[in-house]
Length: 135
Image (cartoon, rainbow, N blue to C red):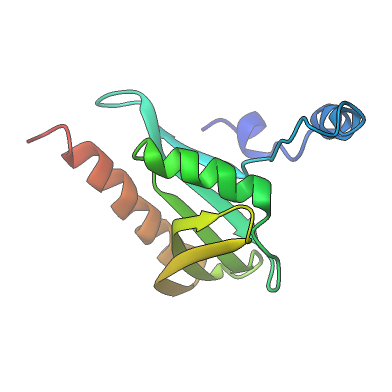
């Protein structure tokens, strides 16, 4: 990854678009997927979807709808909660939910104490993706 890509932060124009979209019809529901892991080889595709939450953040009804759709398509969704500064995260797999209740089911996977541990966990996801094509 080059330094320009590495140093990018949120786009004000993207935030402006999302804010303006809220002024359209009240029936035009949407949600913002935080982070989508992709692989280039052996087959370009999505590995998993990560959603970062701060402690106490709830999964919204629109996120529940989107996560259910992703899971139905075979894409794993993970909820990551914790301290960005240290990499101390709680990682849970989204199992399913119902948007109207709202009710969601998460499966606890692991805690990480550092970005290095998080990197190792993410590497395991990417390895599992690649191994699907070696069989």
